[in-house]
Amino acid sequence: MRKQSDSRPARPIASRRRFIAGLGVLSGATGALASRSLAAGLSADGDRRETADVLVVGGGTAGTIAAIQAARLGARTVLVEAGSQLGGTTTTGGVDFPGLFHAWGRQIIAGIGWELVVQAAQLNGDRLPDFTIPTGRQHWRHQIRLCGALYAALAEEACVQAGVRLRYYEFPLAAAAAPEGWRVLVAGKGVRLEILARQLVDCTGNAAVIGLLGLPRLREKNTQPGTLIYRLGGYQVDRDNPEQLDALDTKARAAIKEGRLLVTDFNRSLRGFLAAGGENAMHVPDADSSTSEAHTQTNIRGRQSLLRMMRFLKSQPGFERLRVERLQAETGVRETYRIVGETMVTLDDYTSGRRFPDAVCHSFYPIDLHEEDGVRPKHLKEGVVPTVPLGALVPKGSANLLVAGRCLSSDRLANSALRVQASCMAMGQAAGVAAALAARAKTTPARLPLKEIHAVLAAHGAILPTAFAQGINE
Image (cartoon, rainbow, N blue to C red; front, side):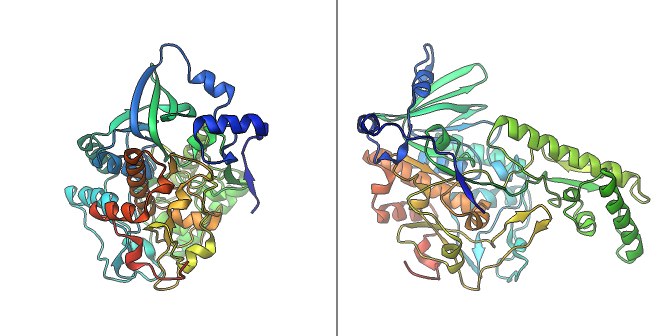
């Protein structure tokens, strides 16, 4: 599908060059990094000021790990999170079965994310899968069931122990380059704060900070649907009575025609929906979390879908005692913006297991593009283990700036696999290392020796992409 860029019109060349020279940005690709409106926003009288070596914006799957890693390396680290807890997709989004950490009988992602996942499972008495048993096309068998709320508490504890300064309920209003690195204005309940940071890491999932800086982002004309995670109980499906299920399916089709249900309310398969208790078995079309307005409507439509299914099923024989056993507060969003990086990971790169010369971690998951009528994963060939290059985490032409997580530089199909939790955790740890080392050396992450990044990652438990990657060499 056609990609659309929201990059802003370029400034006149002469003034733009003076601007970039004054701010120490690497190239002219940065566009309007500090427009007059941003400069005005950053000079408000009475704002409090805080300094950091590393500022991470977004405390989700990737950002939490990035912040812990940077702080464990001694960097003064601030983590800004708009919500009330850490963990993102794993916690607030309700996808409390992160993966994939293993491929073809070997562990390919470890480090801080793995550490927290194992802690959460063990503390709650949950069992890890037997990773020695091949999954075939049932890749989800190697995902790890855990308690999302417990994971959030453990992630928070790890941040506090590492010295991360957590700032919940805050979000960035404006950002601009500065001689010391970055000036970022954040706001929260009764708070406006200017943060001066040497290194900036955007882990918002939407590349929100990249958008504030005026750097180009990519977005598809049509994006993947989201999912509101919930679970229903109080009924039993009689698998030995297919006629009952057929009759129920017929009634559901009639309800769709009458407008009482949408086909996306149960992903076209009522049998599958009921077998799963509705868990991860519905879609919210056009799900979007990139603005507060869009996110509001996405959440409203997710809950409306639940209510439609509840009312329909409660009116059917055998479902009179139907109840909600679990309901997340937010609809999970799979796709919004991606950055334009120094390197873009393509579908061919991913499915061939390309070994990038600047690879910093592995990724492993089927191509997992959701459509409104469901998802049909495309599995990797046996032995293929994709890698993620540092260049995909570096916005093109920027300095002292990284992203990690879903918004990395990649095409749409590659991104549908790269966006999953284990991969985002690995990216977050790599970004945390690069940001902390760059702050210490007073350089930009792209100029760091790759061997140094790899050495620190290995010392902190990460599995290097040189260890197991199989596929096409650079």
